[in-house]
Image (cartoon, rainbow, N blue to C red):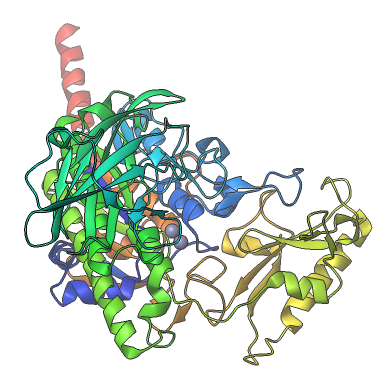
Length: 637
Ligand SMILES: [Zn+2]
Ligand SMILES: [Zn+2]
């Protein structure tokens, strides 16, 4: 049996379920109708990306696989030193595709976070070093680097992080088309977030008034209108354009698109969006597979659209067009790989809901939105990106074929931003954390007076002598400091709301009850309630607020799975690997800890019955063989 695991990052599961049942998401609705949907899918704590995607494909808890938050801290490193959890060498658990390879089964892994460098030998992997193709978080400074560059905006008005341009009369152009007036501007490409150096490049923009005011622009590499690489009217996109760039890593081909967002007829204002410049290689295993993937309608895009929306470069409609480019590319890549490569297992992830909710979950929720109108507007945008994902999923499922075990899953949910809670303030007020002024005037931790410090989304570390490079707490004071931390956390009441932000504060060894243990978790683990904080991370896996919900998405359909059933039992992400292994008869990965989701199966005892039948048949054969041999002996003697 083949298996497909399709991941969405941070969807709000009950909302997606409702949209599907209402008929907005036909591919997901079909999957739900033909399978099971879990109402209570609990993801690991902290409710965050790299650890939870790692749990989905190892079956292991965070303490076991060692990716204990978005970032990883190695014991003995300074307490303020962490790195992003995208490096497979940090993972201490075996991946399901490694176990499958032991049985000769092959995997396709597409844009699955925290899987770089690749750990498969056979099979194909695309991306995995970041949250999208051409986004690099593996061994890169936070937040990420792009190959070749992030999205950019050229505008006559000022926009944050955009390039402001000026128009002047066009001069010295060859092959100037007939027109009443022509304006020109130089567009110096920006290589924001670039992973390597890229040669400076200037495009020449020619705006034409062909009789009724300015209504067209040409984009050219030199002042030759006959060699324009793009012609655009207001509101139009270019098709995919490929250009070659010299970089510090050699010549790189990159694909991109441009949209003319605005061109006023009098030529006074213009806004041109340039998508990320997306490298066409460097992100696949084996290396040459990248070159086999063709996409006319999509882009292998790092993080496109979200910043453009946040910075008000683009409207919501354009935002949805941009995210769709990424989904079309993922579908094109999946359809090609599923059709042309040997495979037994397919794993993928699409990041869109997470970025989108970080951008507008607060504006979408009536409890936190500026107005009802704003909430309604962003709910429409939300439905728009789910529709785009549903089209992607529909194409991928079709390419996967019949009789495949399909699991649609998420790493966590999301909610609006609620009240601010700063755990550092609590530690400081309790005299556990101290600051000093650095030479540049910045407030930095004074390690010589700090007994405890927060780290990552849910940990507090005792600044312990002998373990931590700047440790001041004697080992015999360790317990006392931990108890002071826990007391300070529980005692704290938010003055603005009168509410208590701390949902949970546990000593490291007690945190094993939520799967956190070992040398990569803090001395104290804490969680906050949904009345505080951002979209996800320090919130418990069943937290809810307004429209928001932190619970995971889990839909499973295929041979042996119940149809049209809503599972009431708790489903944990740790259970996915054992369930796949049970149904698809794969070796269980070395560190898997979850259990088979028996209540999702038409006959939970199907394997037992099969084994009993085989044993019965074997005994019958053996009995017959013994009798035959006895007869043979008689004849021979
Ligand atoms: Zn996530
Ligand atoms: Zn997120």
